[in-house]
Amino acid sequence: MNQDNLIEVRDLAVEFIVGERRQRVVEGVSFDIKRGETLALVGESGSGKSVTAHSILRLLPYPLAHHPTGTIQYAGQNMLGLKEKTIRHIRGNRIAMIFQEPMTSLNPLHSIEKQINEVLGIHKGLTGKVATRRTLELLELVGIPEPHKRLKALPHELSGGQRQRVMIAMALANEPELLIADEPTTALDVTVQLKILDLLKDLQARLGMSLLLISHDLNLVRRIAHRVCVMQRGCIVEQASCAELFRAPQHPYTRELLAAEPSGNPASNIVGPPLLQVEDLKVWFAIKKGLFKRTVDYIKAVDGIRFNLPQGQTLGIVGESGSGKSTLGLAILRLIGSQGGIRFEGKDLDSLTQQQVRPLRREMQVVFQDPFGSLSPRMCVSQIVGEGLRIHKIGTPAEQEQAIIAALKEVGLDPETRNRYPHEFSGGQRQRIAIARALVLKPALILLDEPTSALDRTVQRQVVELLRSLQTKYNLTYLFISHDLAVVKALSHQLMVVKHGQVVEQGDARSIFAAPQHPYTQQLLEAAFLAPTTAE
Image (cartoon, rainbow, N blue to C red; front, side, top):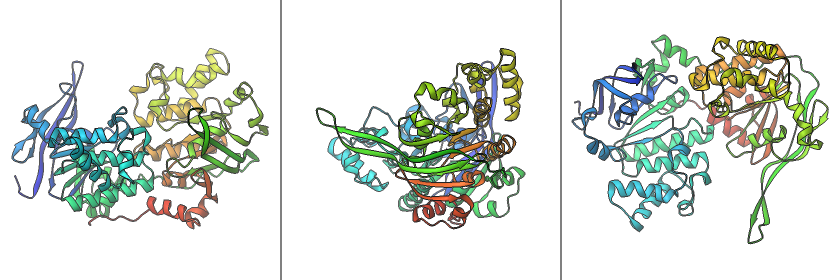
């Protein structure tokens, strides 16, 4: 084993056992991770990135997955041949891992202090005040403000960025030699992503550890990685230094990934009359304290927002998590209570009861961020897409079936698959199903709430092009909520930048992207389109 290498992976192959069938998901993968360097594994969902990384710590679901061939050398030992007791000592101690979604990785019933203390107790034998003191040091190290006030907090009481910092603190608790970061910034805002990246680079420099980064976001990889391995269908198709790979990619798939950034201009529709008018909209949540639960203050999630959206245009709404974007969308659809004027197709929605609003819901549809969470796992695609038709009593069963088939064709799905269930589709296909469900009712307005954030760049580009073509064909109006400014730029005619429930900048999207006026908008754009900062 080369002394410069911390990890050496040779000819790794992984199979999943599905019933009596064996499916090879990783094939002949070989790479090294040098001491103190950052190696990135990139590729689309299903390419084998996470399976390869999880193999290092033997975190695959045995016996449903096994390694038919290959070695993973660390400290003179083959990790694949170690006993469970030995590998447990390495996990979280010498090699640690940060998972993609901290909310599912952290125990929702235990405080932050208890969860970090547990790691210190298992591997270092630290307990009581000594463990708590070390936990405070770790929280301070990863930039949690006022860490002593956060010790008793539960995961749901922290923001997404703070939860990810807690995950990093847990991973760093025992000063590992290798940190594996599996999509550590996917669900985070661009400004928070940048802070997490800077934090990882700073910690790596201070602690001298190696970093294995798994990502489908090449912009992120370009900022932090020293070397890159590109994976496709379980194989490494290209391996090079980060500078070389971005300057002169050799493999067609690598070139495809680099060209997958959403681009182009918004749909060129004939601008119609105002379809949606919002005037001084407010959503305030009361903070109640004391024995009698008196209101002492308000959380002003949406505070005095106004805009006019003409038919056929897209309003992009951007801002960090907690800025009020999604709350604004839900209020416009009358899914939560609000104050202020909401006028849709000439009707004042704010003065209507829920029963009176219900017939109008056919004209106002929504596509959510996570299609796997918004599609019922017990319903087949035909039932999911046709649910709105049945609720609104549109057409005969035969006509409904034809409408479902037409909607699936519109979004690029084979109608023959309509009797399958959501788990049988990829993430991009599931999002197409969600779009078909909204489209089948032929609405005037579609609220798109982070519809591409969980998708690979290549799939994002396909979904953006689909949304543009549908908007052109049917003169649709979109409310597009996102923290991904590249996608917003490709779709939006108007742009609204929201911070703490208030609009800080609003107007023509092209003008704002070209010359943002407000410091917060400038900060968002700088974080989203920053030049690469790798050690090239």
